[in-house]
Image: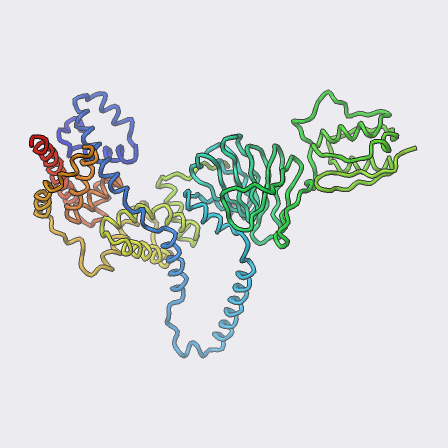
Length: 362
Length: 200
């Protein structure tokens, strides 16, 4: 039918044609048409030009409308009109109503108290709002009973735990990748040294170039936790929202380490994770895990490598300790327990390192 | 389950709409965010007063939330919102802005003023063309401009425009073809003005 089109109007009145120009739909159909009807090329061009010009004129409008402000008004309007002003005098006299009223008043007070308490904290909502000034965000809320996986445009994969939410732009900025988390999620971030990846979660900012880690940041919790699985992560805290990255006082985290931010005291500290895991990619298959009559120092060095954790011990004293043991792929602490029981020592964690105290062996 | 980006297909709209009807406020907010800009531009086409447009959108969404239990499942959320916005304008503005006359007298007046804009001719011709279309758009009747906007900015089908504007499809066609003529005359006139300018 469209082969009979002669006037520009014929094209402008064709829904499929308009959708092709405006939304790039029906691409194949129209490219085929142009191939078969080269004589229609100029009139199609003219129609296309007119549509695009009108489109760009209309597109230049509306920038002055304030989306955020209007939405605030909408929320206010919805809340105000929840209870239409209809109560008669009789209604107010019933005893039931008095109970309800005092209950509502109590709720109000609790809410007021809670609101006041949470002031001064960096909230998910405030973070999203300040990032939205630069970029429109997509929000995913996990209301299901299990975790969900979200794939971002850079093919990073985020596993969002139940009851958590994540906001991210459909397209990242040129120089950085920014997301906002409330709740708990595991991040497996695609490597891109030119575009650092930032996770804003309450007061804590986590910056990486490409690695995997877990963040737990519930709005009502007293702690924000960042645990590293692979790679290197830098973590810093902010009292107020500042998207311009200071990275001063940042903690550098390595695998098996975690940063804990204590919200009441505003302190950020580095620790080992509860159960340090073997760093599979760092394990040298040629290094034996079976030790017969060797100095414990040698075993400590192997353990350091297997878990990527620094062990601090007195080399002179412990060099006398000769033991026989086999390292298994089990928890670091079980193995340290075993070794310490043999050499009569103790250990403790300080600043994400382990200090081993022993009086040595005779 | 791996979820890629939420795309703009209407399938997703229907899901959002259903969630919103069940009281999901985040679905409501997503619908709002998704359509605010386009509804705003449509609103500005109906009435250039920014505050009125913001008020209209505000009322549409407040109304939507309050009546959510009574709303039916709509197949085309976009269409529904455009109709609601248009109705809102009809309600708030005493004078019916859609009663504009369709004759092209306004436009002929405008053509007379074109020659006084010759200073702009020194600019690049494309720029002039765009500006000229813009001026011609301003001289379309309200209904013509509305139809043109829905057609070429929002990319809607003739049927959808008929539904939104509550007129017959044939009337939409008539409105559009009158607009084409006006736009065309405007462009032709522009070219002759350039010629006159050059010959002088």
